[in-house]
Image (cartoon, rainbow, N blue to C red; front, side, top):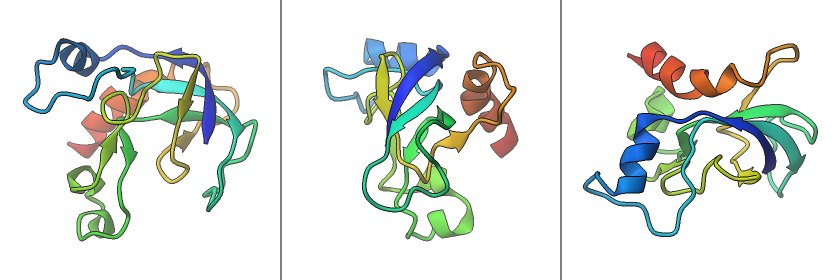
Length: 130
């Protein structure tokens, strides 16, 4: 899906990625930002997983996981060997538009200020998973 970005948080992970400080560096050029929130502008083919054009969604660090491996099927998608990470191996939210996978974006309920979800897509999820 194509998401028109309204807000994006800045995580220390983005800084490390931009500086090339991790053993696996992203392919240049890349667009950081795994805390993007925006409005769905277009959907691609395939299962929309309940997301519709006009919905507000958050695009988290885990941008894609296969959905078929033992990790994905036991709630441990963050260990999927085929995962793609937003702002690292998939261009992220420091742009006007970003691409997200319907299975991995999170719908943002009406009435929530657009500056709140970016914090939850990283720090909130990290704390929850721990």
